[in-house]
Image (cartoon, rainbow, N blue to C red; front, top):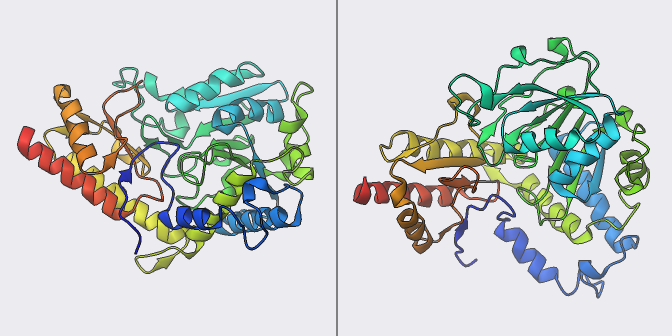
Length: 375
């Protein structure tokens, strides 16, 4: 029987499935009788190649990635991709960015170093937003250019708790540009409509594995357009042709991610298996937490109901003098890392795939007990 661990609500690096962590510990000194730890293997040796090939195949199967998309295991994280993406796809021309939170705002700022960036919509400038990111502007209102090389959106804003419940259909808007999505903080939590996507990228440390690994899933026709100043190790075409082995990849991160993909494929919940099962549990966890917040007179979530994140739930105590007491009480109950991002304050519960339903139930119990005492 596995020991009960505290519930870790960190936004990233975040909790991993305990089953995966136990297997990593078991295989740490000797992977499958090889006499080596995965961290000691040559990335070109047959042992690691088998790990890499399984991870790629499992991810493709899990997310139903079409055959005309290449899966790249890279480095640099989501922030790195904010530069790597325009270096590969902008061709030095027009790029449109929809700003719905802190991360897409950073993406726009970085892309301006390499391209002609237009903010096609800014949620913080909507009526009543007061400079905060609380909603997603309707795609019909986006100011998109016909000549844009791509349109960038962050489909789940980790800091602000805003999530696209459906991807925008650029073709229906009369735009032929590919859609680029940063899905770092909800990758592998739900299905992806690949017919609407040109490229997707994600830092692994929120929902897949340890920090240091970056996933890029890119349509083949978008390869081969990197700017001359793009470092060769970040040229998607070169990385794809070398099967992510152009330089030494983050081998341990790929190994752990592969174990997480296997865990997700066999995951069962509510009569479902795999991605459908984890998505259903994520829906149930989020609904439980939002219901507790909405029915309270002490707490509030300010994000518009139609675009609330299933993964990152920011909330505020109406009396902020109680913040320290709330966090101290949470720690006593084994509820860790609930303090909100410094840029927005308040609290934040990140309830990624690895967070069990029991963790959210324990948080809701604390919310209710604390309100009984202090509300």
